[in-house]
Image (cartoon, rainbow, N blue to C red; front, side):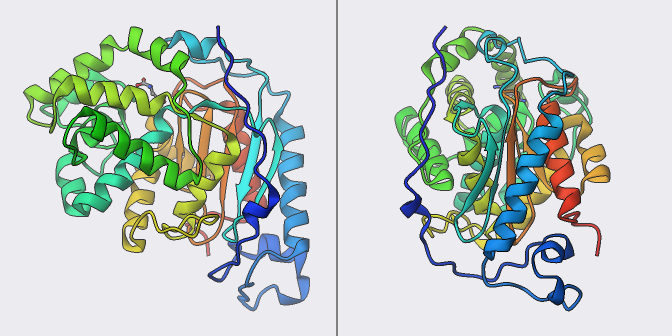
Length: 359
Ligand code: GLN
């Protein structure tokens, strides 16, 4: 079995981009450690100070050492390739709005983005067609059922309810304005590359493994078509959805992609706008509602950050207007969310007092 390629770290010069906006760093947590004299007066800092960066580095290192030995969960195996990915891999990365990535563990290992891709194609459709179409055609509610549930479709006249379950994600792909299949794929991959500020590779071994075994998704695509919730050729949408899930990303790529959402739609490294600022909260709301599937509510209750997982073991979480965290480790819980990635993100978010529902 082909191994995922590992990408080396970009040259540090890539990150020497002047920052463009104030960094609040969430709340007192980080400032408390870094700048005790300013805590409590709501001071925003123009960019993370060296002390902030040291604090973030301590946090990612400590999260890595706390949770690396957690043995719960199991790699996804309904996509054969995913079962072969070494289960011990574990990476954590934080992206700051001034384009830095602070990381620990296996952050240059390229894994399959899987369902995290759904968020970025949703952003593309939002950009092309606006939030009303997203609400009407893709939905804004949780299914309360697993991400590939056919029962959810049966219960709702083949309406996917959310763009972040498989059905809704294929409908999302089908809504992209494209002249033909090639143009369709190019638009989706260019969009993801913009979010990552990288030329993300399609992992052919993952794509083959998924294409050989995606009969269930093909059935879902046809059900969407019968219910008039599919807006391009159903098999074209299913195939392009399968390809977007097979893109190889590193934990640091994922942090930057999430960082673009944390940074109001502007990539923190390239400075390019990928999404209108007004649409970002709508994407984050979709993530809060269905980002971790049937345990999304529990995640909001416990952690209080919009997040999105994929069965490749990646999870990204966004502190709106501030930073993002990505973590990757293949073993999943019963809902399909990485066990170690959830633990690491939850712990770091708690240390930074990042819960969006708290004052
Ligand atoms: N490609 C996977 C599927 O369609 C993605 C699922 C996921 O990451 N939850 O089943």
